[in-house]
Length: 121
Image (cartoon, rainbow, N blue to C red; front, side):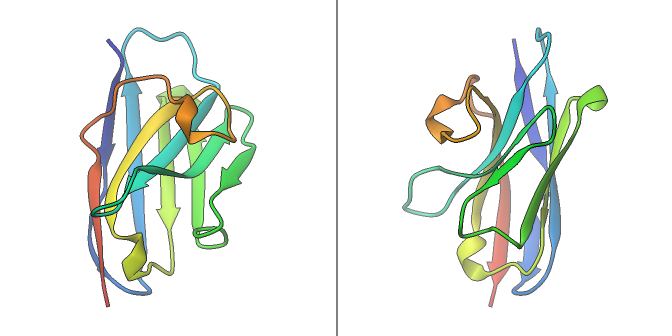
């Protein structure tokens, strides 16, 4: 019933910027915590950023200072502003709701299709 639709990915050069969007729809009343994940080729999906409804945030060390997560509660949409992109940021980016801001394993819904981000050197 709950749908997660990611968009905004693309091809950028190292040092460039990109903004991702995640629209949430379906039979939900409210979502306290949302997060962005990424999966690089040959690697496991990892949590890179999370945000509570009250705008408290948590970032992976690898993206801290470069990425900014935000949300529009009225629109049920979460964003990921990515600056100073590096080739290691390449991967498929996904969003999901979380039970806790500190654990990526606490996701609540089936995964969407994600959006591809490719950073060239």
